[in-house]
Length: 209
Ligand SMILES: [Zn+2]
Image 1 (cartoon, rainbow, N blue to C red):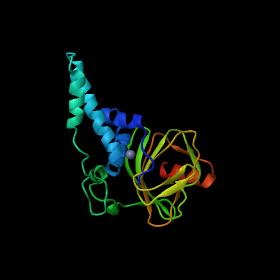
Image 2 (cartoon, rainbow, N blue to C red):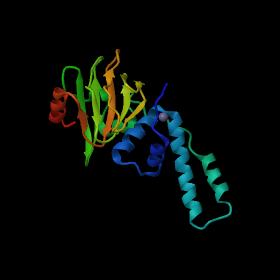
Image 3 (cartoon, helix red, strand yellow):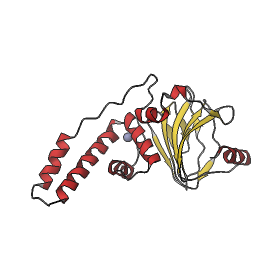
Image 4 (cartoon, helix red, strand yellow):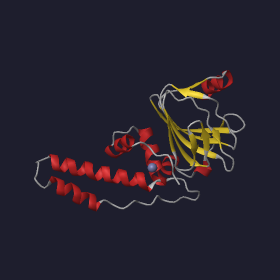
């Protein structure tokens, strides 16, 4: 069961096309796990379309039209299945499944794979074996994390598949991968991370975090 969702403002940005590429990817991937947020986005899109229609020549039946369009909204689309359950937005970006990713090692238990970068925003996959510890850090910008497989725990709670975490610049945390299968996350950072200890600080610089 998904316990942590993107906030509504982010879902509305996504629905209106205002979210940038990295955030759009992480929200679209969350929607593959979460029928509730998917429904919110479908309703927001329908409402946005109806408002645009209604705004052109303002008609007395604009509200009725908007409501009718909501009734017509498509049911939650099933995500396209892959061999290992890789969500379809990631699958189209990777050109394959998560099980085929060539991880770049960052220590004995941590790996990463860069998906793309736009300005200061970096979009990556992160993989931690059970007990992997990313080191205590805070953020210059925001860090958005979506769990794809396994789970992790930090000072703000526990996160499993489909859960969405946001760390704002005031948050200092130290995520640790849960026991069981490896934890694989999709991570979007809007600025470099700030590590407290020296070794993680050097590693972060070397690996471009
Ligand atoms: Zn959700």
